Length: 176
Image (cartoon, rainbow, N blue to C red; front, side):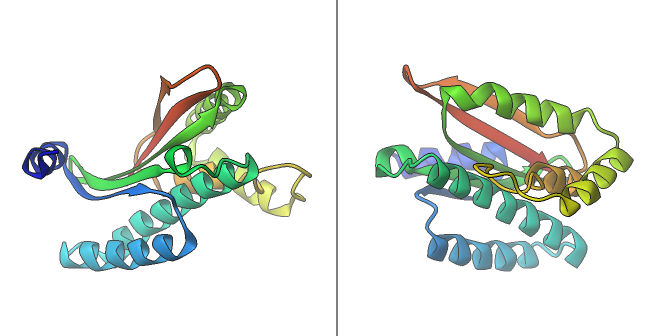
């Protein structure tokens, strides 16, 4: 592997930070510290720094929770990716992970549903979800995508790539 070529591809794509591997708690925390330090060196406002950091945390937790709930533990399958980069005048935070085929349609529909909401509808739905009990077997309180959308300056984007008969690779990007 030619790391120079990889670095050039990152530069062309605006990627400032990237992690590829299993999202263990200690790694999430260390990368979080690196994200804060790197963005602080960018001389961006504290508000933007906190938005990017919050979206990073939410995306990583979503991936980690999904893989745990589905019992996906084999390192070659559980390895996921998170990137933070520049996008126009803002930033883009993207995550990618293996998703079981049975979950792809509902995940895409949920992102589409949140993307179709206005800012006021997102805030209202977020407050409503905060008051609801978590359903048994649910992957969370349903706040993650709403929180990401609240903090984003644009609609979230996603891509799905076939892997094998049972799984796909799902990429979700948020723009701040």
